[in-house]
Image (cartoon, rainbow, N blue to C red; front, side):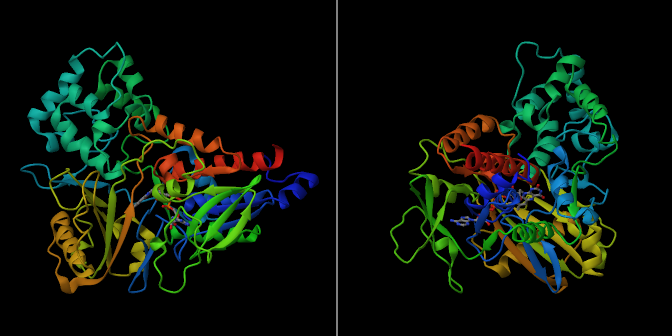
Amino acid sequence: MSEHPEPELAERAAERHVVVVGGGVAGLVAARECAKVGMRVTLLEASDALGGAVRRAELDGVVLDAGAESYATRGGHVRKLVAELGLTERVQSPATGGAWLAGVPGQEPAPLPIGGILGIPANPFADDVRRVIGWRGAWRAYVDRLRPPLTIGHQRSLGRLVASRMGARVLERLVAPVVSGVYSAHPDDVDVDVAAPGLNAALTRVGSLSGAVDALRGQQQSARKDKAPGSAVEGLIGGMGTLVDALRADLEKLGGVVRTGSPVEALESAGAGWTVAVRPVEGDEDPDAADPGTLSADSAERLDADAVIVATTEDAARDLLAGHVSDLGDRQAAPQIEIVSLLLDAPELDDAPRGTGVLTVPGSHVAKALTHATAKWAWLREAAGARHVVRVSFGSQGEPTATASLDDEAAASLALTEASALLGVDLSRDQLVGAHRARFTQSQPASLLGAAERRAASRAAVEAVPGLAAVGAWLSGTGLAQVVADAAAEADRIRRHLLWD
Ligand SMILES: Cc1cc2nc3c(=O)[nH]c(=O)nc-3n(C[C@H](O)[C@H](O)[C@H](O)COP(=O)(O)OP(=O)(O)OC[C@H]3O[C@@H](n4cnc5c(N)ncnc54)[C@H](O)[C@@H]3O)c2cc1C
């Protein structure tokens, strides 16, 4: 709908109050969309900072991204938002050094081959591919060129498709590290048709999986063939936290009210609208200690709303929605992730020995991946001076993070040891200027098998309740590109409901 409504509509909009619960990117985008048409908007965030998985850390004066560090350019949704917020001049592409791969049995780390899709190579005999999968792996992968394509139905499991056509080495050494690094998921669970649209159709057309990768890469006009994996992303000078700051500033400029330290405990339907119970957090109180779901405490503050948009993580959303929404379906498995950011005084990293970072073959290392952030982002290199920022990621589907039971000191030591191993450089404790750890629950990607159906069912159940919406990565799929587009669409649905129904 138009963001500049007719005067009569503007009057109606000003009488409507929307409460948004959760101040991650989904909540901020949804709140801003409602505020744009003149509605009264209150955004309530449990913690003392906005942004959720977009999180900042400061190490010895260097401000860096402790969570999400970029966005996918796919769909153009985030870029459009960035432009609307006047941040276009801050857009920065990552360095082209590309990622490396570590943990291939019997091999030193090597650059991740270029020109593939989700790690699937277009040419198994290319030097950079063969270096990783060996001659045996390359000949097995070549069988793909000789085998007829599956003509009756097609294989939707990425893992099974790759294993059957190109063999275990391509799957385990190339595809699994990329899929685990990007999605925190196993390739068997990833839906090819969502993760790589058009690949199955190209396979039927050209007769082989490697040929399909080649054909699809050729079609992707925006992606040059020599682009390194992961390069279809952008970041912002100053970090992704600048997007959160700009969203907040614009929301407040549009008249929205933003409250941090305000965990919502419960929702109650009240006539045609809602009552939202919030218990402001005092001082050092832990917002997570609140017990969402009941309206028992008299001390809770109550806000009236014509509509509520729940924009929290999945667990909190389910607690708040229970009792109002008939069937949200099963809770999804959500891996715990920890990122330990290290600020290092280490001139031996000046030449970026492992490009912009390292992905690991699942099971080969304690850490899942490493980003050499000062090699990847020019803005951060400038901000860090002669020092280096390295982010070590722990945790994947179904396993507790290796750092889970460690104190901060021990977690920093483990991250330093892993960084030394993955970067191939001896990093000592006295080179560590500072360390920061951040824990997250990672929502599942939209490309998991069955995810689209599960999410559509949950969404339909929420939409059946008038004046209620739910947004966020657990419903849109993880990644800012999905989260932003989905939150804007849901906010539009609520705007229409409040103004027209
Ligand atoms: C470590 C990590 C790295 C990532 N890197 C990237 C990347 O580089 N690029 C990319 O595109 N995507 C990345 N992602 C994914 C992306 O960051 C997320 O999908 C997205 O930020 C999720 O936004 P959200 O608003 O749905 O949820 P969140 O960011 O989780 O926000 C939910 C908010 O709700 C609040 N909340 C919870 N309960 C309550 C309550 N009861 N009352 C009030 N508030 C409450 C929380 O405190 C939180 O602020 C990354 C994710 C993680 C975890």
